Amino acid sequence: MIFDISLVLIIIILLLLIGMIVTQILLAIYGNEIKKFFSRFRLTKKRQNDDIKFLLDFFNNLASTLVKLSSDHVGALIVIENNDSLAPYINIGNKIDSIFFPEFVTSIFYNHKSALHDGAMIIRNWRIASLSSYLPMTKKIVNVEYGARHRAAFGICEKYDCFSFVVSETNGNITAVHLDEFKRLSQSPEKLVIEIVKLFASSGMFREHKSLRKTNIITQMEEFNKQNQIKQK
Image (tube, rainbow, N blue to C red; front, side, top):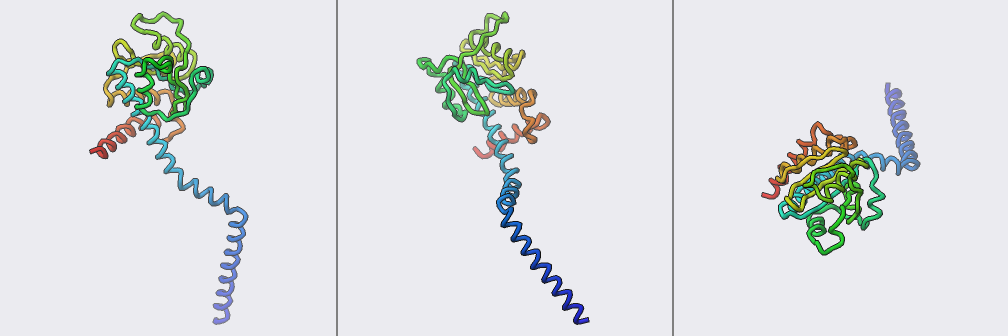
């Protein structure tokens, strides 16, 4: 019996040693790949949360910018690329690569003496890609209350899958255009941001973001803003 137990212990020890040796060999050969795999696994949730925060920040910044411009009756045209590339119009404008933040955007449109004031600001991948890009005008008959910015917003959305946001210099109205549809938006920051998110969600823009699909995007936005308000207090 003692012999049998000793034999079993020896076999277990040998198996453990073999396992350790095999593990070391695998780590030596595939160490980098294994580390990358577990690193990606750990960061997936964090990256997803970072992406959500980044997008929700963008929506809030866009809404606050439009409201500020609206309240001061400063005309503006902001176009956001969707499924179709707007490269031809980015290239003919003043190309830049900048995050979208209200102070910078408003400084562009408020400065009437600057050449960058005219034309459209184009957003690609949630970043400012160009300033003062001139867009094709719609050839359709539109209401006389709509000026050159609105006609350009209609024109680009007729040709490309993108979103246009126009602030009227005359009355401060905020209009959103997507494809052949346009809508007058709220001038209340809280309502406006929800309207913007709904507009993007209805286009399927969030298909690649599981947590930002149409079924819960509004809840995500409201919860995000609620938490921000608590932090600010």
